[in-house]
Amino acid sequence: MMSGDITKFFDEICVRLGLCLSMAARSRLALGRFRDEDAFELAVLEAENLDPLKVDRRLRDELRHTIDRYW
Image (cartoon, rainbow, N blue to C red; front, side, top):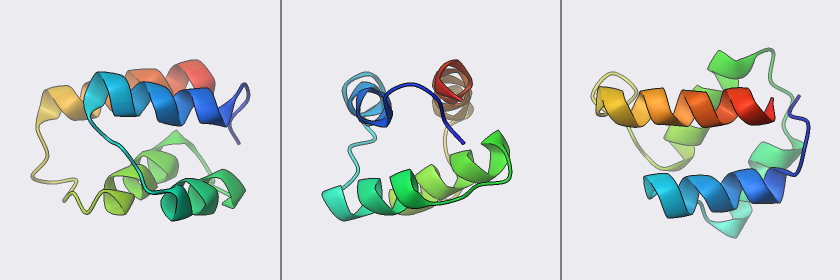
């Protein structure tokens, strides 16, 4: 699971990437058990109702880079 402060992660992706998750989505993700970074990345995108196959590649790269720093 993620190390560090999950709240800081959510705040960072909101400010830097525009992925401002609802409090309910934040809670679900914070309490969830994800097998790896890929699964967590997909869950974040799903929480924002974004199709991982259609989302801008730069946004996915930035999201992944941010996840890697907090994982």
